[in-house]
Image (tube, rainbow, N blue to C red; front, side, top):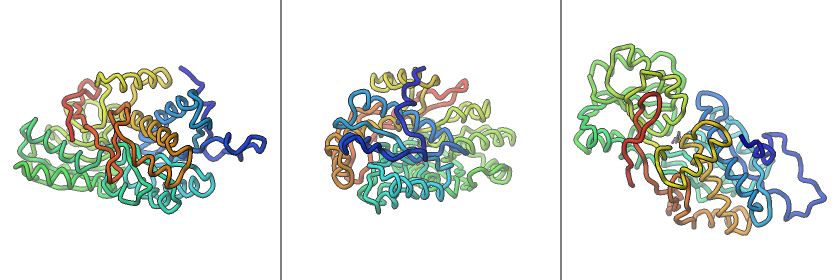
Length: 377
Ligand code: PHE
């Protein structure tokens, strides 16, 4: 494994003032990242960070952005919105970063976005899909699709590909992502002639799903839509099987973690989810990233790692075009991004500062996600 990456990035919270002997133009360009590096969504932040660090190493190896090296300042949100707000404030006011990458979970991006907007510091969420994230202002961007599309993709798969007539929905009421994606799924599933037979809720980290799953079992749905995050989804799958429910589960990108099958084991086999990319995709850009990632870290990257990488690459491309300037100049350069060749596909930023991109449907088989079908916007 190549360890050189570690030498190129700053340690969270320990960043010292730049040396006064170098001229201003040679000071490093500071880029902030806020992500859940610990907690129930830890793999989200870790994967994003790993991918982003590869993008930083690449730009620095190639001489930096207009001669300036890029340096990362990274903080852990622990999956908590209050913590997210605190660290984003620190990035904007103390560290004075040029741009912010993050978060993954939409609720956390919604906590950070208004702070970046108020400070006029462009923020790029690699993977938050809730519509409202980029609506926080003209400084806020994302490099992934939105949940209106993801909900449609899931409904289409359930109705057209699988022929499911009835669905139950089990959503995380504390997560903007989960609530929004459930809404989009229900709307589309019904419009396609499907019937939603039960709608239940839970809270992140809940231990016992017996009551909600028993209610769902009574309605015998063809499929259970669970737009949650991987730790909860895995526990829901285990408890559903214990209660004798055999219907497959279906979800969105929040399932994307190696921990899903590690925790869920046999219970999650035969279930499906939508995602941003699949390592089975033969695209040369994705495969080049997969090879680099494995070389550096060992395991196959998840989609979050690829999106973390892409958000970094896209940001550095925009920074070169803004002449290294931040603020409105950088926001204009990001907004002008067209056909950027990302590992997760070609990225064009639309008028709402979102990326228009394909989705894939994956099936969990033999403990691994397998590519089932690509879906275009
Ligand atoms: N889309 C999810 C959200 O908005 C986050 C996520 C993206 C999780 C990709 C896993 C993979 O909260």
